[in-house]
Length: 360
Length: 129
Picture 1 (cartoon, one colour):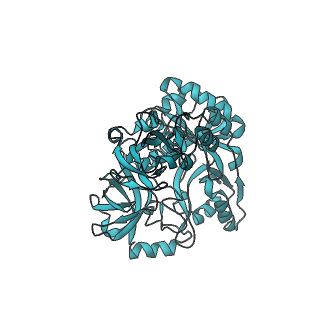
Picture 2 (tube, one colour; picture 1 turned 60 degrees about the vertical axis):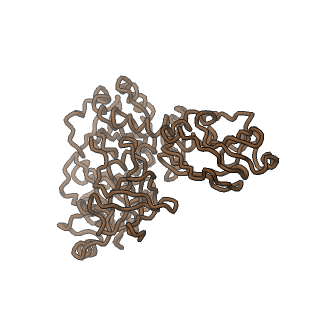
Picture 3 (cartoon, rainbow over the protein chains, first blue to last red; picture 1 turned 90 degrees about the vertical axis):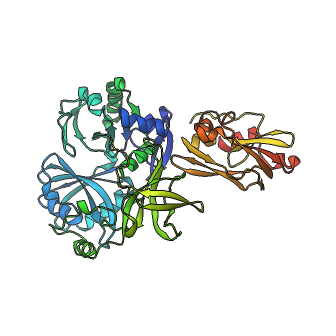
């Protein structure tokens, strides 16, 4: 099993560790509810160094990115990031990712840990114009510092103007005395904050500096369990749960990052699918009856016909009831529609709800 | 990982229930190890009150934020009572698994069979150690 540069730090802090995407990762420290509230109300730090980072460089880098990804990377400028996905040539999704334009002809792609090898092979396979590709995943640490107090907690550590940093923009600079740190106004929580990329050799120093600077704001380490409850309250997709190689990006609600103004893998197929209309959609719902939806549970109508399946679900720590995402027959996707979740052979009432479930 | 509390005076199952025997009656809950593995518990669902259940069969389920788990009867017994305080405050299971977080009181079908069907504290400590 792989470790991040901070795995031992988490163990020393008493975190409960679990294998995740081949890495020994902290799933919780004090408890999922406590950590969740810490991020919603204050500031918390996630070690997400298991995520993958690729550098693509050269005069044809943009062209390669345009072909393998769905969003329009020509809209990027230096210091701008965008959410996108890699269509798989069969109408499904290789991965979802962030694309950062570092400078003209130099991009960073941030991919899911479980897909690093698959993505690398896929992009390499389409690299027929000699784009220089570097996989810096194993040497790169990533901390997500998230929550309404993230800016205050971090601003003493850097000259980068964190307050003025627009959503989905980033800057490289000195952070906690270390050079060449990339700070990005992105995240997976809906709580605001930053993601901080740096070389592994600085991991312990930067971790400690962040906790020292954030102490007066009640900063805490946050595990993967709260990362999941936080993203689910926002209705953000998780690769492997809500999207994968067999799911249509249009059914998954990723039409907004599918740009038919350019050419890319699967464009004709997806254009046709859009014209024909999809039959099911990834849809949010909240439980009305008592129960927690889990991945794989069937979604039923009032006559017990299967009309969909749950892809993600959890008790929402912020809301006090359970929420979920699932692929649902399009006829049932209007917000407010009554549906039922089949939980251990019982039909438990739920209502279609448009995410985000949690509104700050 | 933190050391888990395993009281000597209880019997245990491999599925992480504890059982405290008092003659032909007993109280059942889940262990400190189990609550710590489950994490924050959202609710405990026990709809078997009044039913007689075989050893190893399910008497309820426990829903934590991140996972769901069945609850297994350590040995044949009739469910006499469910801890209603858990309806209001399921975190009792996290905070006091052997005390206020108890789940059911039962009448044992065959009290003599209990020892063979369950583990001692030392055996259970070995299992989760």
